[in-house]
Image (cartoon, rainbow, N blue to C red; front, side):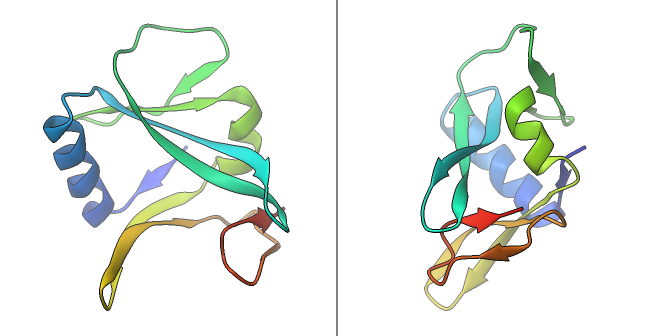
Length: 107
């Protein structure tokens, strides 16, 4: 399960509607000093695909591939604003640590 806070839900819903998309895809890629980084992409359309989990919400789909689900299952997606910066924040109980710049993590 992917948990989405109310702030993140409303932001995703607005972005999806504004971009004329059906949802988002959350995953991880190998990169950075700690090894893994989160990836969030828009989804143009969706039909059932083998190896893809749909953690759909009421107003949009949230897709995760099986490889990434090992890392992001039980994660919370939040929307934060700190000073002039704002963006999605991933709160993952499986993370052991993050690199100094905060761009990558290790489980």
